[in-house]
Length: 240
Image (cartoon, rainbow, N blue to C red; front, side, top):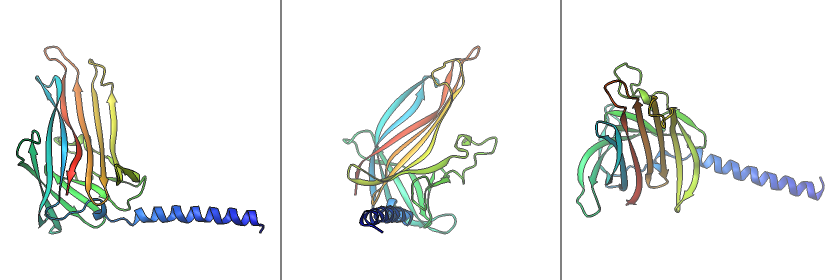
């Protein structure tokens, strides 16, 4: 083998080893790396909440600050170690936080399960690597005729931008859904929008969340067009 071929072979080998090491590093990453659950840990967010008013004819965005704090280690309904998380809310930084909701987080080792409004979501799952996907809403009843959560059916949660550094933080993104049915700009036709995206930072936890579900029913004789649904955007502003 001449010197040129030898140098080329060594260069390609180094690239392969480097890529393999990076890939293996994230595949072996623990759920706790991106969702540390420790009593006393908190994250504060700005919250923009989309709601519909005036008989569901128009939308408004109301802004708050919320703090999610891990306040106790307990067991879940399957007798597994879990953590209770209390959410506190205030209108502005000049107001006092008041508790308004509780959640349950369980790290199974292979997944992070998060119970919100009595619905259990699989927020994270191993291996943590780009393009790995799972059914994040698998535990939710999306099939019953009376279910209020049929729009959550068959969502594929998929990792993207694993290891990308944002504002000095090593992050991962989970694309949950990006669906538009019909034409939301058409006031005379049905439309539905479903969007879900979350970002987690290593050593911190959730730093960004976008969730949107809206349905528009066009006008019929005797009734104007109307919307149902809601949306939230969370952006981290502080943590310990």
